[in-house]
Length: 390
Image 1 (cartoon, rainbow, N blue to C red):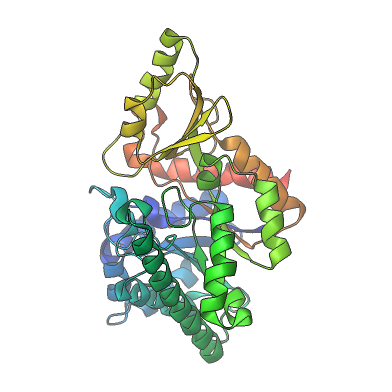
Image 2 (cartoon, helix red, strand yellow):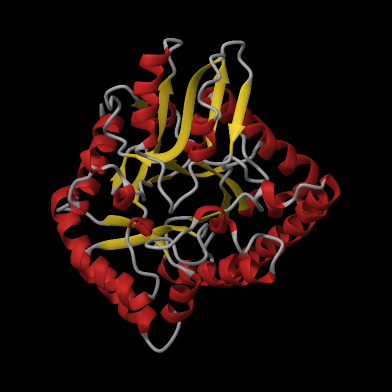
C-alpha cells in the first residue's frame, strides 16, 4: 500500500509451497482477505518470493499473463522480490543451504536474471523494482583466507554480470531494477562496514563503471540482521547516503534479544525460554555481547546454548524473526526498538520507497506466539502503518 514514506508490503516467503501452482493458489486465497482489511480502497503491493522452480514455471505457457491479469483484477502490484532462498524454504531443513547456490555459481546468476525478467513485466510503470539477494556466500564454507578471497572475486564478477543484465533490461523496457544485497550474520558480507568496504574496494573496481553499478546494485537493509550485530542504524544509513550507495528496501523484521543475568537461577530461566526457539529448519545465528563490549559469534542457537555459562556475556541477540508487533515475551524480548528507530529515520527523510515486512517463521514459532497466518500479516502491516503515519 502507498504511504507517504513508501510502499508497504509483506514478503510471500511466509507461504509454504515451492512450485508456482501451489504458490499462486495460496495467493488467490489469502490476498483478497488481506486487501479487504488493509487497503480496501487502493492497491496493495506484494513482495513476491519465487523459488528457482517457480520462476521457471511462471514463464511457461501463459502463466505470467494469467498472473498479471489476476493482479489487475484484485488490485495488487509487485514492486519487490525476494531472490535470497533459491530452493525449498519450508517443511525442510534449510539452515546454511539458504545460501546455496551462492554467487560464485552460474545458477545464481541465471535465477536472478530470470527474476528480473519477471519483475520487469510486473512492475508498474512509475516505480523502480528491487530483488533482494544473499551476501555473496557463507563464511564457514571457506575456512582458508585465500579460498574466501577467490570466492569473493568470483561472486563479485557475477554480481557485475547481473548489473549489466539489469542495465540491458532498463534499456529495453525503461524499467529500473536494482539488486539489493542483504548482509546477514556469517555471510561474506555480514555488517554495514563489511558491505561498504566490499562495495567500494571490490565491486566498483570490478565493475569498472561506477554509474552503472550504483544504478543497479543497492543494499537491502534487513533490520533484524543489523540489530543482531548491535549496529548503529543512524550512522550506517547516513554513511551510505554520504557515499551515494542506495538502499533498495527496508526489510522490517525483529530478532530475539535477551539480557543474561549473572545469577545462575535467573540466567537458567532466560536460557530455558531461548531454548524454545532452537528448531531444525532455519539458521539462528547468535551474537553475544560481553560486559567489556566485545562480541562473540555463534553459527546457530544450539552452539550458543552449549556456551551459556560464560558469565562475562551480558546479552544475546539471535537471528529468529519474531512478530514485529511484540517486544516483551516474558524473560526475553525482541529488537522492536531497532525497527522503530529505522522507520523513524525513513519517516523523517525517506531513503527508499520499498518497505517489506519479512516474518517468515510462523510455522516454527513457539506455540505461545502462533496465530492464524492472515491475522498475523494484517496485524504486522497495520502496526507498521500506524507507526509511519503517527
